[in-house]
Image (cartoon, rainbow, N blue to C red):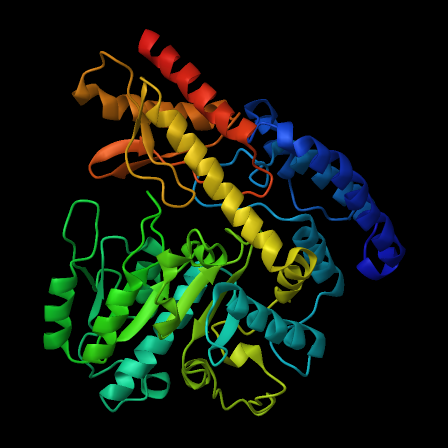
Length: 476
């Protein structure tokens, strides 16, 4: 029985040792584990129970968590998780995250952790260099791309309100007209959520499209910006169904011509800048007013990790600082207080895993990962195209392969339901994970290849399992 953490302080090293001891076998087995093992689901009930009156101590609690977690977890950090866009965690990033928990820094203020603040400053500079943004851009780390979009669009809201003579940070939106927001059909739900949280309305964004894929209608955007006055344009560097990109340079031209704020949602597509083969996809991003991205996607660092850059760094402070709290230090350009540059006050030192992975593998290592994933996607796309029972729904641009199961002889009006059932069975089967979407009105699979562990064998297994399950569904 341990009634007080102080009485069990000697157990800390033993508890951490249990995690380290379990890590080796778990990571070694990870490449061959099913993404989710339904046979282990019964272990989830072992998490439940009444709140203990008397604790059993750190080693016993951690040992039980390891017993349950290593078996019942969704092994999304393994090489066969193709659902959504979920990267793994490189060895350096994972170890850096352990260091983050070990040191437990309060990273919001320089006063509370010069280590965390300096690491964030360095990491932001390295990320700018990695993706080719100008040195003059300011930035802040966030928990996710949703928070990064929230931060960039909050800066856009502050800029827009100032054009109407209002300090929205101090006075809010009362009395202002609706902020015009335009995008293509590629706009992501996280951008809508950010607009919702900012009081601008989830559905306030107007999508201007020229086809059923959602591609931007530039002529329509030109007309709308000419009539709107100060406005915000959301450009999308990579959309989730086929990894298509908005024409960033063309949209930057229109934003400059009409005096609009250009926000680029580059949650995963921003990392296309790392390879000469794909850098053209993000040409023009350096002209944006704000740029958001995720680290726990293609950078392969642990959850939670996002970042945002803003062309005018002072807007970050005006949008999020100035709390008038006497116990807080004043803003300082050298001793940066990052909680005054973003939506969080209490912040973990999420710069440390990013620092570790960039220090460990450098620009060339991360470029190699980007190019390998694209090569694997091209391989999968070619396999689909050469198959008589699979159909490629969109060109392979980056790492998503949008395709459907289409065996000969199945009527067109049955294919959507067949593929919907196939997607559900894939998740239930658990050997590989890939979900369905609706692309251009058609139900399809959209596996995303962004994990540093993924190999050609893993991609081939996906095709094998799709065919196996699909054939079984046809026989039912």
